[in-house]
Length: 49
Image 1 (cartoon, rainbow, N blue to C red):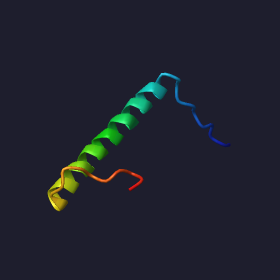
Image 2 (cartoon, one colour; image 1 turned 60 degrees about the vertical axis):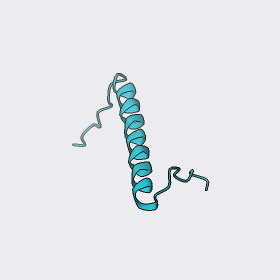
Image 3 (spheres, rainbow, N blue to C red; image 1 turned 30 degrees about the vertical axis):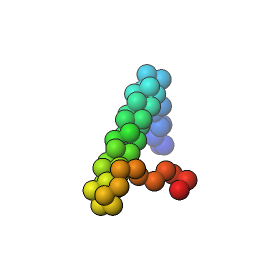
Image 4 (cartoon, rainbow, N blue to C red; image 1 turned 90 degrees about the vertical axis):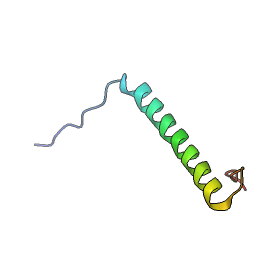
């Protein structure tokens, strides 16, 4: 017998979006703080630099 894959309820989509957005924001803040500590520059490079 094959197990059915359960689909997550629609209510989890906004939660996943918020957690993903928050994680990305925290990663950006951590990167800028690390860049400032290592390079002693106020501005971190942009993604396209």
